Image 1 (tube, rainbow, N blue to C red):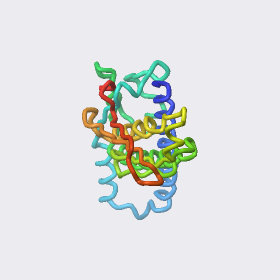
Image 2: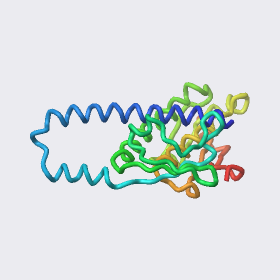
Image 3: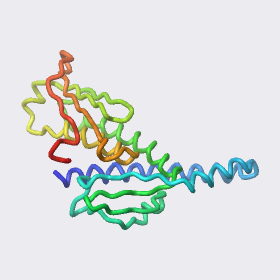
Image 4: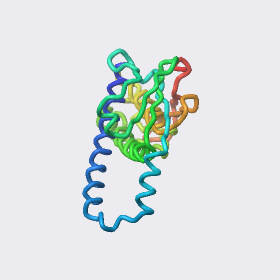
Amino acid sequence: MKKIVSILLASIIILSFAACSRKADSDNKTTTKATTQVTTQTTTQIVDENLIDVEFTVPASFFNEDDPATDKLTEDQKERGFKKAKLNEDGSVTYTMSKKAFRELKKTMQTDIADSLDNMKEDYSYVKKIEYNKDFSDIKLYVVKKDYENSTNLMAVFQAGLLGQMYQAYTGTPIDKLSVDVSVIDNDTGEQFEEAHYPAEDDN
């Protein structure tokens, strides 16, 4: 189970970093063309954004022996604006980023988590529609009930809950405030017949 967590987490972070990189390249080209139009006010704003730091903590449950919690930043993390990592006693890691880098990460994380949820319809044939709110605290899976109940692969609910937690954790929600409700709804009748809350009690 923890290996699945690690794989999903790595996939989302890689996608988010790649998107941040593409945006940075685009911004650099735009800045080059408009250099003569940059004002003192704009320059000051950019400096202020890089001086103001943002901290967020990722739970210990998001790490394992293949992807261990550490206070060492990778070169990729440094390039994306991560300034510091602090390994806490409970196994969680607190990251520090510039405000600008954090804002870019939050934006790309939202897009990538939404894409990952939408793509679950391809991974689980019984899932027909997925709905979610802005912070992914409320996720609804519309399924073919009979196929869902007869399936041997019921990871969809867990995966949806994990993705919601990942977005919240990496965008500044305190660990004790992480909260994702996943509802399973009969696509034909609209009746909710199953629900789960994450993090589960045994994860705390």
